[in-house]
Structures are given as structure tokens and as C-alpha cells.
Length: 74
Image (cartoon, rainbow, N blue to C red; front, side, top):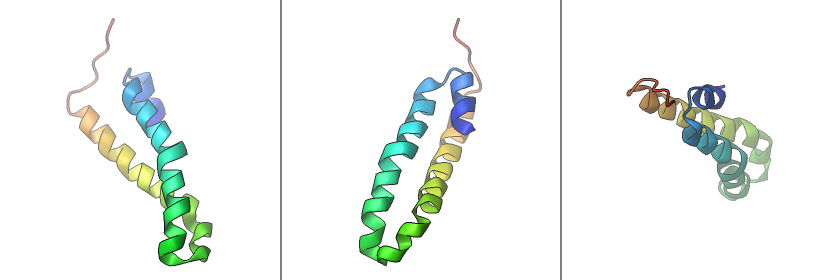
């Protein structure tokens, strides 16, 4: 929802960043790294872990983006 909100308020760079972070970067990092650290059973929690990481980053990005307010370019 945060990505959609950012896109609808013409902050598509931030929205695209969240989408790429969610679908590729954090997903791969969690799936490839966490089993080496915590064992193979952590793979069942990988979606919860990477969604939580992306949520934290998205909220931080939203708060940073909202400091300047919404500016529509015509």
C-alpha cells in the first residue's frame, strides 16, 4: 500500500525502489543468507522476515518523503 501511495503522489522512484527491494533484493538475501546462519528450518519464516524488513524500509522512506510534503508536477 505504501508503494501504491507513493506512486499515486508522483513519487514513482521511491515506489519502484520499494517494489524492487521487495521482489528481488531482500527476498533473495533472506532466502540465501538466513539458512546459513540459523539453519534450514528458518526458510519457513522467510516470507515473514523479508516482508517485515521491507515494511520497515517502506515506512522510513515514506516518513522521509513526507517531510517535504506532496508536490505535484504539472
